[in-house]
Image 1: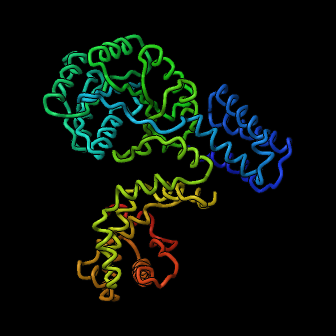
Image 2 (image 1 turned 45 degrees about the vertical axis):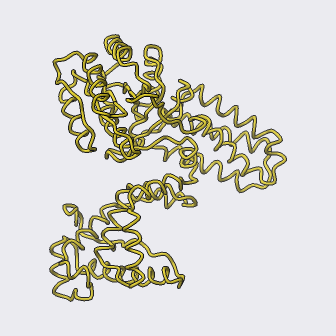
Image 3 (image 1 turned 180 degrees about the vertical axis):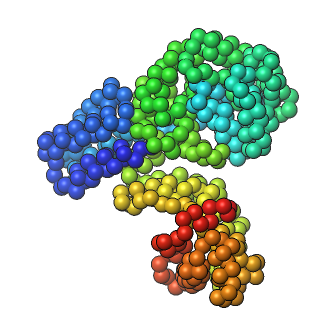
Length: 453
């Protein structure tokens, strides 16, 4: 979402960083570029004005002029002010002294509220909680069925009474069910509308008064731009919410809402949805987001993703296999699947610090991994364990089965052999370069491997 803004700010600050001394003209020109970049990103005008004023004041003070590296100090100031703009630090949910903790989800129809409720439940479940969902959207067609479906996918019970009961009664009943069944968190999914109206607000107020939630979260679609800020203001006037959840941060909109809504409402952004899958949901860390926007990567989030997707026991077993020179194609397939669980290759690249603009914005075709997987799955178990058995006729058979070419089979087998050798050197202290992921050669058949997962 922030690609365009990130490119503009990175270019502007990169020019400052390379200078040993900064004149007032240098700072003035940089502030002008930063202001234009934020306005083009659809950030609220008053927010931009206040942000640039704060940066300019610090950039022209002794904080910079007395620094040994003024350019880098300005970059640090922009990073800190950007973090401050989105919130001083990550803020979690309020926990009830006596279970269950009640979370009320609010938002307009189409903001991704129902799916977000399930994503939040999954996140809490993985954190050791026992959440439950309550279906109170009785107006949108199939809303209850959708919540039951996604709740089942994340392994969380859904309390529902169909579409004929009153939403307030369903909410009260759902909280009682959660308490009786020993659930320590209950998430109430309420109805949304295509626009803010009195009926929606009145119903939310009645549900809030009936359930006395410990957390009221407003779900906002990041792709709606400045309208998201207007929606937040309207909800704040009627239903005082405690936190914001931004959805569709993986979209291609300009991202102004994400940078404006915290400053305009004064309410912290607590969570962010970074993809369509139920596991693509995370706590919002303003400092990490600022680092991403300024092209400085986000190593902590990358490590957290890796810890969540990589099994420690399997990693230890793999290390022993590598030491014994037993790294098979099945092991390679397991590693590729672990990487896929962490997100797209493009998103992983953007989290790495020191990665240049060209590499960060390079179009990465994740279907290359699909093709590698298709090739490996087209082999017999014995061929995966002993790749040296794959002769000419077998390569032709594998190529036909995977929708690829013999040349691609040859390249994968060669890369696997090289990876196996380098991994053994690394684990044995032999040094050498880190192994690269297998890449298919240019000219791969279009659509090859798409149907194999």
